[in-house]
Image 1 (cartoon, rainbow, N blue to C red):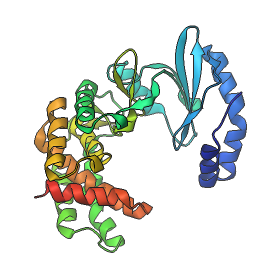
Image 2: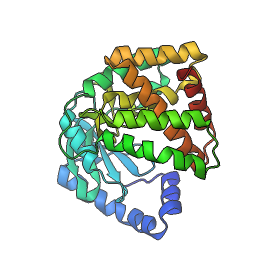
Image 3: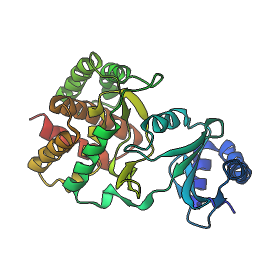
Length: 295
């Protein structure tokens, strides 16, 4: 029996209307087809979900797995390609994939244990180590970070103006210049572009593994900013913020200047995005982060 959490269904229908409703109605048949194809059995356990996906606990012989099914507009092609390239080294192992169905079969991790619940600096050690383990040459086809950096450089000023210039202008100007510099030398490694503490789960094959990559090609230091601002409230003062950055850099064997630069650039970018989305807490964290790193 396919169980869809009410909050997920309400959110999808609220965003996508009748198209979302029709997809939910067709979902049980799709899950049944995938279970037959991959010879897995749906378990009577809690269905997990994100904004655009449902994750069903399943069993294949004696192996616990997770069946991830995504809303069709959320393309999983690059996620599958990245997981295949990592082959379980630092990331959840991909067991099978059907991009046309928006479906992945993944090894089972402990969804109840993430780095969110680990002491901040210990969590940063683990996360930094994972950045290094995930740093491999990027296969062809991933969006280059040179393109991402160029887009930020060209858009932060107009976005600032469109919002009524809410950020200190010196930070917007700095982010534009630094993003321009990053675009000129943005690297070519496979990068998990959504590596925050909730996306690192406990495993049995390895202690901690990354999930849900939005993969790009470029500098591994691009992964640092989200690990800075998502738990910034746990860093009590500027010294703790600088220690957090230094911990991630050391554990990941990263370039300290690039890690700081990407953090400044992405903090300005995320602050502007958060204001446009109506967020309140994240812009305040970005303000505090920039205030410390630009001293």
